[in-house]
Image (tube, rainbow, N blue to C red; front, side, top):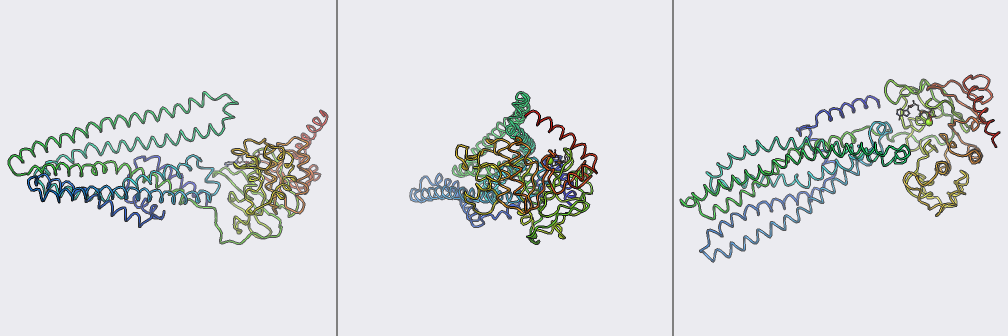
Amino acid sequence: MEKEHHTHQDEQEEQMKEKPGKRPDKAGMGRFIKLIASAHPPKAILIIALILTLIQTIAGLIVPMMTKGLIDGLTFSSLNRMVIVGLLGAFVLQAVASAVSIYMLNYAGHKIVANLRKRLWHKILSLPIPYFDRNRSGDTMSRVTNDTSLIMNLITEYLVNLISNVIAIIGGIALLFYLDWVMTLIIMAIVPLTALILFPVGRKMYRISKKQQDEMADLTSVLSQVIGEIRLVKAYGTESREAQAGEDRIYRMFRFGLQESRILALVGPISTFLLTAVLVIILGVGGVRVASGVLTAGDLVAFILLLFQVITPMAQFTTLYSRLQKVVGATERIQTILDHEEEPLELKQEAAKESRDIILRDVAFSYTEGEEVLHNANLVIPANRTTAFVGPSGSGKSTLFSLLERFYVPDTGEIRYGDEPISSYTLSSWRSKIGYVSQESSMMTGTVRDNITYGLGREADLEEVRRAATMAYADTFIMDLPQGYNTEVGERGMKLSGGQRQRIAIARALLRSPDILMLDEATSSLDSSSEHEVQKALANLMEGRTTIVIAHRLSTVVHSDQIIVLDKGKVTGAGTHTELLESHQVYRELAQKQFVEMGERSMEY
Ligand SMILES: Nc1ncnc2c1ncn2[C@@H]1O[C@H](COP(=O)(O)OP(=O)(O)OP(=O)(O)O)[C@@H](O)[C@H]1O
Ligand SMILES: [Mg+2]
């Protein structure tokens, strides 16, 4: 099922790439409006903002008409005073309405974006692991940051203005006709000409800014990759290569920036020219008409003022289209995440409390279709015993752990806990039964103590934390750290050594006191004496729980109750160390090689 989804989404993503200039068609706009509606927009505030913008717009239309009254009424001083008061009133009203509505619009925009980001963030956290295999983390981050910002800008700058703009244009044109229909008709003839020039330019701008966005995403992902692995970069002296890679992208962005500048350079003078032409025509024609007495001087001034009231919103319309295109794209990318299947949620039974055998029946799994990495695995992991997995690198050991953690769903077959399939349990109850120490010994930014208690779900006093750390042979080195348990470990635990990280990870798993303990090469980066100590600690710990370990060194698994040999995704043997030595040729060879090495090592001491 997961796989079908995969191909479907890939198609969607490809379609998006093919058509950068995706039109803001009805369906796209519908999706956008639905997305906004789902983000709990503060409706009352939006409505008030709308009313205020309308007041502002109408006041803006009244001002020229009053100016006309002022100019034409120059001789009637009694009327004059009223007109001046009215004019001032209109100005103040316009300014206040504008200030309040700008604040409210921004409030609404920020509120909607915050809600949207919250929703996205929750969603991302509940996405299944395969999603993260397929998508660059930079892209997913960009959904939460950039795409939501695009939406906010549209709301604050355009959405409510849209309605008042329409009113400004319609009202303005009506008044223009009222003042002088002949001149208005002349101007109306120029408008289509402007649109003819500006619309294709708007489209071109959109295409460029779309490319700029893609380049920006690319640059961000290069930067985060290189900065994240800066040690690798320096160790292998690839600074200049990475510098070049970054530079190429920076220059590509520069070139798109230049393309944009060229268009802007054209648009500016053309608009100014058109505007000047319109003004000259109006002043020319208007002057003649005033002279002939068809128009008053006040009419002409009002006409020019009104014209500016109409031109500004019209200019906004020319960029609205490209803005909408951008936002429709952003909406679709956000929607792709929001529509993505989540990890199966609840409405299931809680995982069984008691310890049971874990049974795999015909389990097959592939990360990508057609490349199976586990074939038909059949095995039993007995309750309260220690089972070890051995096998060459890439044989599927960690994959098997991922399946047990339910990070992935098997393609076929079933994993059971006693007689119940683990897929019938709620994820949270199942995962809370497991203490998992991964191959990477992952750390979070925070203190040592934060890391040991991470995910515990309850308060643990220092006493308890120290007990877990002591069992993991971590207490001694932690107490030697500058601030002991309150020492910051740095991003991803960078300030600790590999072995220290590993022991903290073990302490974290121990503190949970899990029914099932899974250790993926948990002792691999320890020196042999601390390995021996951790082994002892683990031995205490393994007692009374189901323990599953992966180890490359056979010395650490010889005492396991059961050893399972994996080879190229197949279970090729199961039994105790002595049984396998007798019956399993690959295991015997592996054992011989390793014990010879161990012999050599022990001779060195
Ligand atoms: N996230 C993933 N996406 C695609 N393929 C993967 C992924 N993780 C692992 N694989 C592939 O699955 C196979 C088994 O990998 P796995 O990590 O289970 O091996 P392993 O037995 O744990 O090896 P090692 O001993 O080196 O840790 C490998 O061929 C690997 O390339
Ligand atoms: Mg592994």
